Length: 409
Image 1 (cartoon, rainbow, N blue to C red):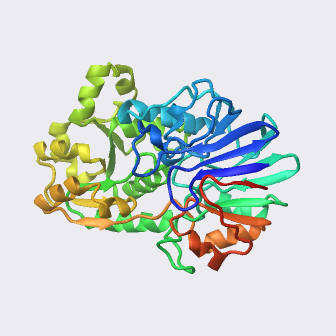
Image 2: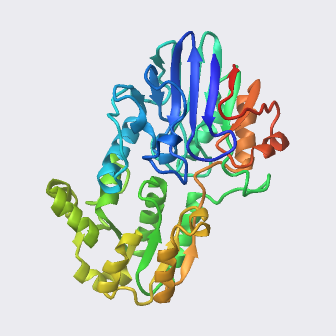
């Protein structure tokens, strides 16, 4: 089995791995770099895209699927069914181009055959819903792709289950190390349960509207926020995009627009989209508990808004910002790079304090070490990390590879 990491040996985002055996080839992930443009053809990995047996997408984060539209339209795409629904539901709002996503479904523990390759997915704890690690077998060789994972989220039992019953006889482990450039070896991230406690405290101390800036696709975080709302007697306000994403999970245990304690708020920019694209059926499915912009001020002190910057004009026109607080619950790198400079200026202009309450979607160094020890691979290859040099300090059997380099398992 020959392997080539096209992007990922020294960076986070834009991951793509090509695997070849006996003339058959698959790609694992086909991601957009974090600072990339989906239309930039120069970002597409340089290999023959026309005769792939399939592309296997580990999870629905754009840095793992965001270049799929550059593939031949008939390329099979293997991914989780919920992941497929989520990325499709997001397209009308984000404009992210997608090809047809027809292909095999990833179901945890159920192998699928793609040409000469057997792929066994393992559902993992991650900030993306329906995320998988992958065991890839061919001609007696066993490659394990960790994908993105953690052990401190709401699905942490999946991580512990993997440690207790790991796949064996792993020839090579491609191990993500997203946390290694920002944490010491013994550091750990807070859990979603700890975040819930912090949220409850912040909500209780805020007289006005609480706004939480987080990704609607971070389903664990939405669940955490909903639970905090229930404990504090506040209503969770979501927009139509968030309602569509939650619906796409297909999970009856995930908060939905029609649940008690959840209400729909449609900002003006989305209202125009609904009218222009005639999304009236979508709106009808989610408007059971709708709050209009003219009613925001009256409910502000009793609500928590899943905030997006596009809502800023609506909140100003509604005069709903008196004694408000914003909770920032995303990667700090977005703030440091200036991605949200306009939002920060808006917050400062209105005198709105900002609280940082967040935890990573990726494993801490401690949990990465536990994971590597459990799988005990013959070779451990760094991927999805800005600090590959730290692997040798933490793990045995580290073998460094370069982007574009072919190597054999």
